[in-house]
Amino acid sequence: MNENNIPPEHYYGDLVRKFFLTAAGIMVIGLPFILPFLPWPTLYSIVAIIVLGVLAGLTSPRQTWVIAVNTGVSIIAFLMFESYAIRFYNLNESYFFVMNQLLALIFLASTYYSTKTWRGMNK
Image (cartoon, rainbow, N blue to C red; front, side):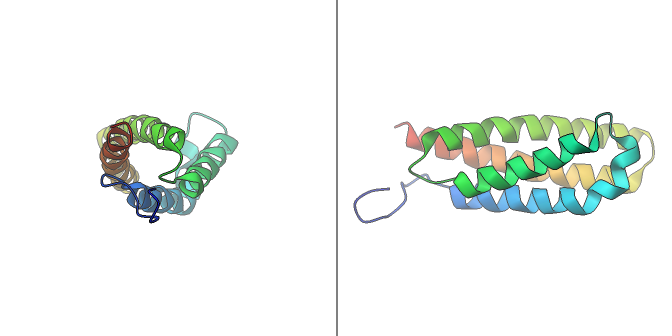
């Protein structure tokens, strides 16, 4: 932020925050339904949801490191949810496919905007 408390020109952290909270909400709602398909303990998914909430809360134009972490988390989450969407599509599990595809799209958008923010912060 500058002296007038105006975010930098290419700051999209508020949008990334909304994407993270939306994805966390979808994950909370969908988690009970996909438990049989998860290859890891439930606690890992719950921790991932909390991490999204914490990162959303920490996102600020004053904290470049959080923007970099948001970018990394967005990329990893996109890769994970898109690979699961493809898996569930091939298993003819339409509900799980749609949920994972939606999450993949959210994280693809958050990848774009967090990368754009990170690039703008490092000018």
